[in-house]
Amino acid sequence: MSPESKDQGVPVSVKIRERIQAARKRFHANDNIAQFIEPGELEPLLEEVTEKMKGVLSSLVIDTDNDHNTEGTARRVAKMYLQEVFQGRYSAEPQTTEFPNAEHLNELMIVGPISVRSACSHHFCPILGKLWIGVLPNEHTNVIGLSKYARLADWVMSRPQIQEEAVVQLADLIQQKTQPDGLALVMQASHFCMGWRGVKDLNSKMINSVMRGSFLKDANLRREFLALIPREE
Image 1: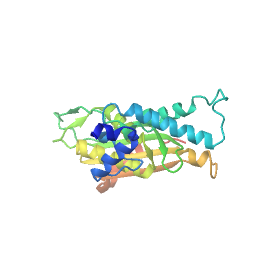
Image 2: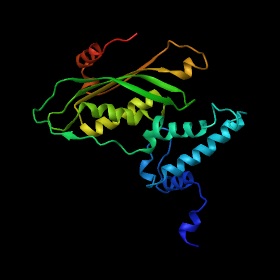
Image 3: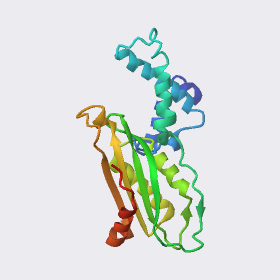
Image 4: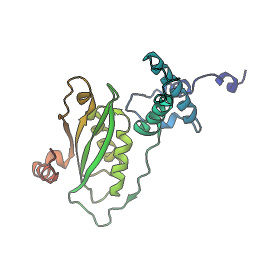
């Protein structure tokens, strides 16, 4: 029997999972798995998730055959997960053009507020907020365009996350790409898992930060960065 014949009838999610396991890599909710997805596999994966979502709706005792409002909900939810809110798991890292630091810039630069749209990995409820990035460039390394910080943030945040890990993950990515002398991130977000369920507190926000290099060592630089971030109620 040919390998192609063996593969017939095997769900595409199983094929992807087997590749990841063969490479001894993780596939946690906030991991990117794009390198293990072959061209043309996202469409059958969408169909597979659609069928599984139909089963979820059926188990919730929702009559999708006769309810015009939920007739196409399974596919809409599948598309939302794969192509929108969780697309950072399935798409390759966005291209980030780097430029030589020709003027040897080494002064504080702040990018933000960048809109953050994510989802908590505990309940798949939205996380919506703002992100500020402070960079103290190294005068001998490359820099990236301002819009690229937003692209990288969206790529990392478009996965099931917890806020604390997401900010560290993004900091690691920016650090790797630009090797700055200092890097600081502050994120403020509302978590719908608190406002929509559980304690149902609509006003609580979570703020967390990551400080690297000069921002960690120099209290004055850290204070300058935090003072320049607009306070939001």
